[in-house]
Length: 93
Image (cartoon, rainbow, N blue to C red):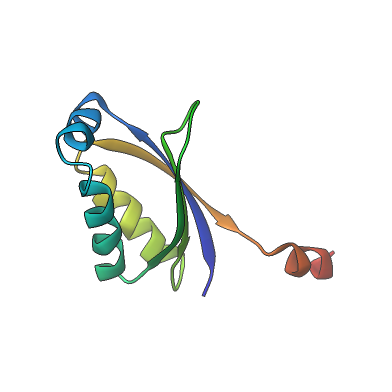
């Protein structure tokens, strides 16, 4: 399955949600699975983004649907990108 990197920035509402219910992070991961993808790794980060997720999804359409669904809630802003394994990238050159 293709791999994607999803970067997340919490909105003020999102910060309050996480503060009041830290388990919401894991609930969102389960929702991503229900949309047809799998969170392979996740980190809380300092700096421009609050979270970095590595997600496997069947295709770009599925990943776009996930970003749209999560973004429509107003608790975070998302930026997603395709991740190409370095060996695949090198062999394509």
